[in-house]
Length: 518
Image 1 (cartoon, one colour):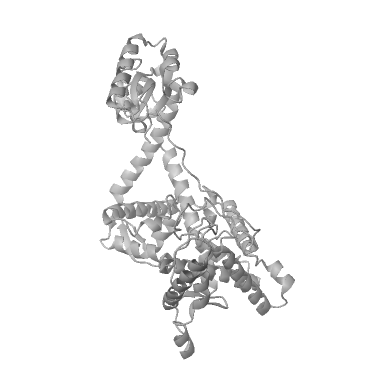
Image 2 (image 1 turned 90 degrees about the horizontal axis):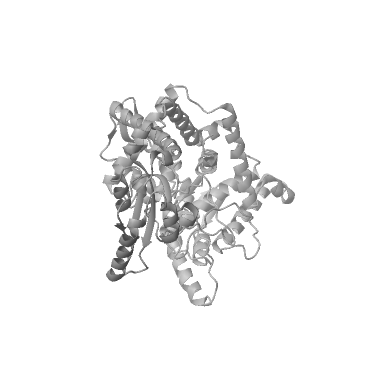
């Protein structure tokens, strides 16, 4: 299956579930003492206030963060209840429903592969290269780089040097001249030769100057933000192999674009006027909208609902935070095209189903196995796997109490910065919700926040000024400083002292003198 890791996609959504009160006692106490219920356990206002207020990690005491902690607790307690009763969550019907977005993405990927194969890739010709077909150019250069924070006088001096050397540069000695004079940090590896590249990959001054040259021609000094470039456009023979590969790739992308244009024209997509507000509400409380059939967009033969939208968003790469986190603050002018794009995926899925495209039995079995491994990892991380519970408890009630207590210990470790918090993945949470009740009470959350703020104020005044601060954040919860860990694996509920989170991944710094866009 394409990108099988999607089956364990970590996607945490804050959820407020509303359940009916049973009897007068619950009606009177639910809004006073209880924040959340899950399995056979309750999260009290006092307990949540203590968790947040006394947290050793840098977590602001806010309502949003309180809901996140309560949701995390509820998911863990559902897992604990399942473990106490030996329920390994193997119901294939429920799994199929929960992982439907994964199967759907796989079917769309397979269908689009068939579409692309129906177009014959073009390896390009000399005429295509000479015309910069596909926006592809081939060039090498000699860079006379500006010094850092160059003054106008220094820049002028660089220009004069480039102009003085330019008459000496020929096709025959270009490589040697690049090695001798170029300030491009990559010249040692490529002698200033960039090969074939998309026009938009380089800064405009460089790309435009290259496009203006005939193959083999050498330019006068060309100014850019990096310095002055002497550019030679590669001949077809020099660029032939690289151009053929990249032109074929561009042809495939072009066929994809042609198909999407045809799809858009034939199916008449229409995004509803209220769609942006609908997905903003869903983004704030995704779990509440997992079965929301409100129509966001229509197309010939189908529609996109809020629930389907959330399924597709679940499968999207999570760059710069969750996609859902970015939706509430986005303008309608951005959200409407986004919704339209998601509706196109739904339409392609419909075509894939019509074409009988499906996941194979092997893919389905592999995903079932991965799901079971996920459950086992979550249990082991929380120290509530059935075998360990059976070693210390004789019957189901005792196992429930023991598993619940271990979850509480784990939550203590998380808020103390001693364990990595691991959110319950969406597919697993859907199955847990289908089998075991869980709810978060809004009034209880408000009371817990009010109390936690007082606890925090008291704790802050008593905490030593040189107390080391952990960098372990709650998933989805903005810390007051630092970067979240790049990835989290379920840890033991009894972590070793001094355990540290994985360091955040940082993009490489741009090399000075590069003509590529930063």
